[in-house]
Amino acid sequence: MLEFGFAPFIPILIMLAFYALIVYLIVCVIRFMKNKNRHDQQKNEKLDQIIQLLKERERQP
Image (cartoon, rainbow, N blue to C red; front, top):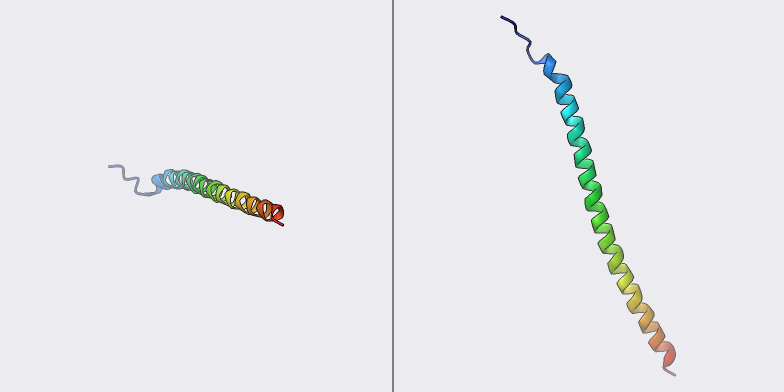
């Protein structure tokens, strides 16, 4: 009978691998942005604390 072998499935596998790579990269970018936003928020809070401390020191003679 007809035997196609593995060759016809290669383009489909390449396409699936490409889509899997795209999904993986999108997930990595989303994780990176979440971490970046969290770290930026923490940095802003620390800067606010430093500003408050400097203002308090300026008030004291």
